[in-house]
Image 1 (cartoon, rainbow, N blue to C red):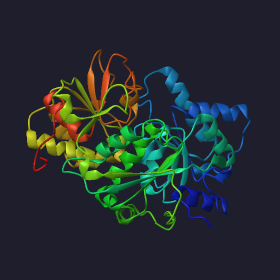
Image 2 (spheres, rainbow, N blue to C red; image 1 turned 60 degrees about the vertical axis):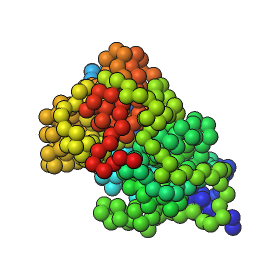
Image 3 (cartoon, one colour; image 1 turned 120 degrees about the vertical axis):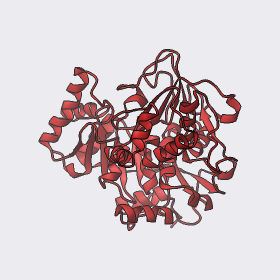
Image 4 (tube, rainbow, N blue to C red; image 1 turned 30 degrees about the vertical axis):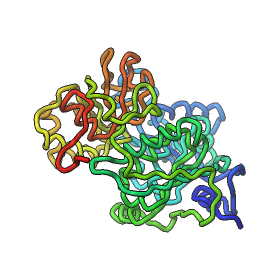
Length: 421
C-alpha cells in the first residue's frame, strides 16, 4: 500500500481502512468544540433539523469565552442558549472566566494524540501541537457533527515543513509563525494539512508549537500536525497524556510541497496592518511610536509568555508607558501569575489584567483601542477593525517585542540579559 502522511493515517484509523488525499469519506469525530460566538447558530440549526437527542454528548465542549465579561443583554441571551442546551444534554460547558477554548480543552483532558477534533472556531488548528487533527468549521457543520457524531471530509493534501537549525536568543515560536504565514499567504496551503518535521523541531517548545499551529489558521489550512516526538512526550508525561494514539508519517509519502525553514535565519518579525501576511523585520520599522499593547489571548497567553515579558520588565525596570492589557489564556494561568507575583509586578508597572477571554482580540469585550491607535498585539489577527475600531492599526508581534513596546512606547528590539544577536 502507498505510504501515508499523518493526516491520511489518522483518518484511516478513524474509518478502519486506508484513505488517501482527494478521497471523501464520513469519519467519526472524537471532540466537538463550540463557543458563545458560533454555538448559538449551531443550536439554531439543530432546532431547525428537529434534533432532540445527541448521541455522544461526552464528546462536546461548549465554552463561554468570546464575550467575557458579557457586554450586553443581547449577548447574555445568546449565552443563555448554551446553558439551556447543557441543562437538557450532558455536554461539557465551561462558564465565563475559566479560559479560552483552545487552552482549557487541553487543561481538561479533551485532547490526546491522534484525536480528530472539529470546532466552531477557525483556530481549532491549534490542537496540532498535540498531534491532533484540529479542524475549524462553520456552525452548520458543527451542528451535524453534534447530531450524528460523525462528519464527511475530503482527505486533504499535505504540505511538509522541514525545520533545521535553532532559534536565535529571544526569538520565539511567534516569529516562526509570522514567517510561515508570510510565506504561505492565503492560498499556498489552502485546504492542506501542514505537517512538520526536521531536526529543528527539538528547538521548539510545546508553547512554540501551539503558536505555530494556531496561526496557520490564517493560511486557510485544514489542519496543522506536529509529530509526537521527545519534546511532546515530555509534555505528555507532565500532563498525564498517553502517547498510544500518536500518529507518524510513513517514509516516502507524497507531499504537495516541501518547504525547508532554517530557524536560525529568522529574526524579530512584525505583521503590519491590516494583514497577517504583510510581515516585516522589526529592525526595518525605525522605532515606530506605539499607543497600546495587548499581551495574551489564545496565541500567546500562556505562563511562559508572561514569564518572558516579566523578565524583560525586570531587566529594563520602569513602568509601561502606554496602555497595556494582559489577557491570560485560562484561569489556571491567571492563578499562576498571582501565585508567582508576576501579576503584582505587571499591575505595579501599570498594566491592566483582564479575565481570560477572547474579548479584546476580536473587539467583543473590553479592550477596544481609541481612534487612530497603533496597537502591538500578541494575538493572531490584525484585520481592519479586528479589535473593534476600524481607525486603529494592529501590529502582530511576540510577547518580548510587545513588552518592549509597552515599556518604551515604541517598536524596538527587546535586547536584554544576553539576548543580543
